[in-house]
Image (tube, rainbow over all chains, first blue to last red; front, side):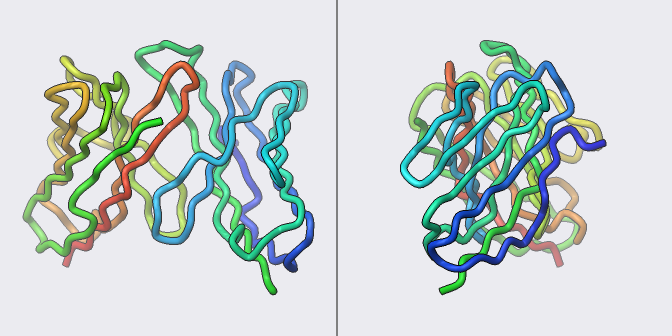
Amino acid sequence: RKEVEQDPGPFNVPEGATVAFNCTYSNSASQSFFWYRQDCRKEPKLLMSVYSSGNEDGRFTAQLNRASQYISLLIRDSKLSDSATYLCVVNLSPGYSSASKIIFGSGTRLSIRP
Amino acid sequence: SAVISQKPSRDICQRGTSLTIQCQVDSQVTMMFWYRQQPGQSLTLIATANQGSEATYESGFVIDKFPISRPNLTFSTLTVSNMSPEDSSIYLCSVEVLPEEKLFFGSGTQLSVL
């Protein structure tokens, strides 16, 4: 079983739709969680951190379920510019460690159509 | 946050030659990472570069093939040695910013080996 698993997609949804991705992780010692966005032929960029209480940033909502070991990303009122690959990232480091272990999911491709 | 300047952005190299990729960060960081990303795939960690000590390599990557330098807290290089077509990929450097453990990436080096 992969340490971090994502549905590769592609998700093809119309503009304005709401879309959600899930990501599961296998190591219960995972400490911190993030969603990154990667555009074609570009580097990944941090979209948002994921906190235990859930957090929202504009149209984006991230949630963490430690009991079931998954995180989710919800995008409301999707825009054409949201088309990208979304990477789930899990950090096994307890923080301030000299050996951070950061695991990337394989990414979920999202395509927004007009 | 951190701003990373990575160069070259792309190169086309002959089999058997070596290429050195440089990353310069605008602030001092403890942890720097080197990743490889094959087309359509997620990121694979090559090694962690620590200032003042040898890099720590992941399984499947060795120092003779991917020597890394980390002379100070703002700079690192990765060399891809004795290249073959199988080394064609995007190489990315990354830094971890504490305490949030967020990753920031250079813009990547697209390497093609003929």
